[in-house]
Image (cartoon, rainbow, N blue to C red; front, top):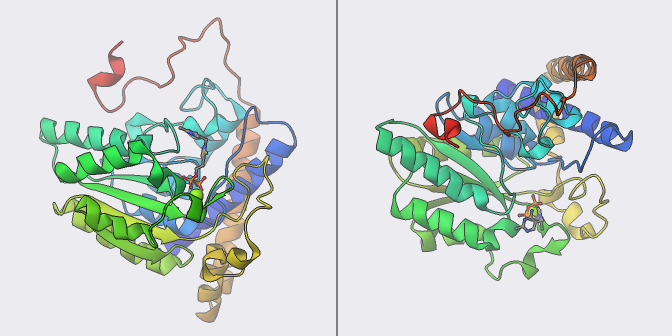
Length: 323
Ligand SMILES: Cc1ncc(C[n+]2csc(CCOP(=O)(O)OP(=O)(O)O)c2C)c(N)n1
Ligand SMILES: [Mg+2]
């Protein structure tokens, strides 16, 4: 686990730091939303899926995307608007997807992907595809939406192999969790939906790995939807336009305010692996720089030549070709 998760956490952190710089340099059209502090929870989810599974990442899931196999050049292509990217420069950054890899383009961060993944899993069941798992994420704020409720309820009734990872970072934009829901712990809701639930310290890479591994296994073996709630903090603003100054000091200094990358680095240093960690960091940094250089030289779309569809054909099934 250490190597797979550690590397992908570093790759996600470093590419997002670069995206923040590119945003401030005016090279990105639209907003930039980052997942700083959420790499362990997200990365474990992406890494523990298999080829043939479905992943519906949200705006803070760079680590999960990279872990599930999204190439870093495609990340840069989406942000810099290259026509060679998965969205061919037609759709901005966080809404990118690649159906041929099983990555669904995000509709919204606010629960829409729960029913979308449930629908894909229903389709797979009807087609007789066995042993597939679908994983999507939600924020603490998203858990108070109707979409979240309907999606999870449907998945529970149908006992779909859905893993739903909730990143409880204490805020929905600037709205604190006590203004979002009245229950003490979101994981307690699992019982109400009739699904299995697990709480985890989202800043602890090892714990995230172990819990999500169990959830994915349980879903795969037919135990129905799995709700994983990770407590952590987003160590950045809601987007790069926001400084997150409303985040309470007490939260920042609590366990949930720890930086999962530092937790991992300390863990490795204690095992005399600081050099290995640094090596992974250097490698990730080179990968980011190479991707930026490559994509900066690529063409942007020509509206006279484009066919305007958002996704490329040849993906998961007939639905794509339908008009
Ligand atoms: C239906 C809808 N309402 C509002 C928004 C704007 N919006 C995007 S993310 C977000 C906050 C989400 O909070 P949470 O679910 O806790 O996720 P986090 O941002 O903390 O990762 C809001 C209000 C939106 N995208 N869609
Ligand atoms: Mg939140």
